[in-house]
Length: 140
Figure 1 (spheres, rainbow, N blue to C red):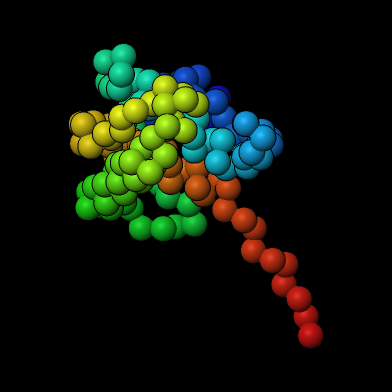
Figure 2: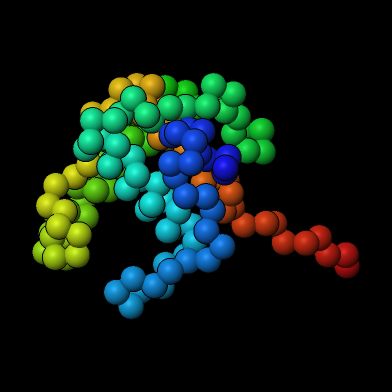
């Protein structure tokens, strides 16, 4: 089980991928794949009425001692996600309709406050996992 799985349900979300994948001739990084797969999983739970399975980790701590996410932080991330999806659908409607059949946005703002926090914490964990290592120290 990955450290992301408890934020949804045990075993429900794939763990970090060792590499990316190629879709429609586009090379996607492991980071892009994991974020996309995670958000698709959340959307699937929303669409099937299983929002109650989107659960946060009560002991969640951000990487590197970053301050805890406030409710305002969570709201800003959810608002940014919704905005990004609206822009994508508006500008690339035919691509999304032909590629995945999508012609509407996920509207993550529909989630309960508890589920919204769980989603943002899950994204935060993925981002922390894929953060590049700092360059090694060099001595002059």
